[in-house]
Length: 219
Image (cartoon, rainbow, N blue to C red):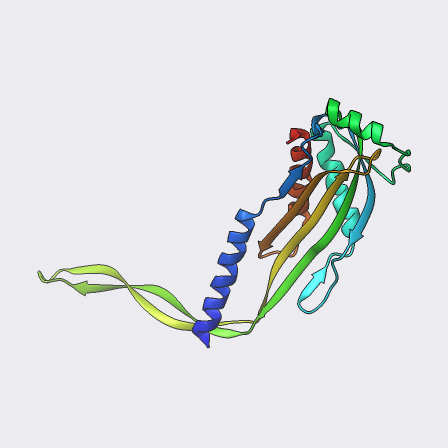
């Protein structure tokens, strides 16, 4: 049992670090649009599908925290973030055709955010005993009759109390739309996990920075 618990803890830690290191958003850009022309992003819709259940606890202030991260990241990319955009004006096929020919993108675009997961999971590690090695200094006689000081490993058991291991989760979909034609021009899925914490703020900051950076790249 002791060996199994120790192995489980090590596995949890190693997996969480691997997931954190590999986390990065995947995105798609409409080939007919030049996203570098965008100056303003209107958040028109926010859907939160992250619900608490089992060992998972959803973040209570998901929308406020995500918007805060977007506002903080927008200044570095010279973008303006607004909420609740005005209704789009009617469009026709001529407008769409002209857009494709000139490859122009509206300076103001709409953003819809869908949160599939934002919160943390917890795993209880039962109390157990673990082996601990201490080194005790002693003197031993060598073949010449001289005494030399050496460190001898001494193994003994220590009590490890019950602990809770946390893993923070972020999974967000970002969809950008042309407000004139309602055409999706950009899509990004950002999935991140970090072990040893229940705080998602750092991952949200990086998610917002990566989103706006990829938009400004325009490809």
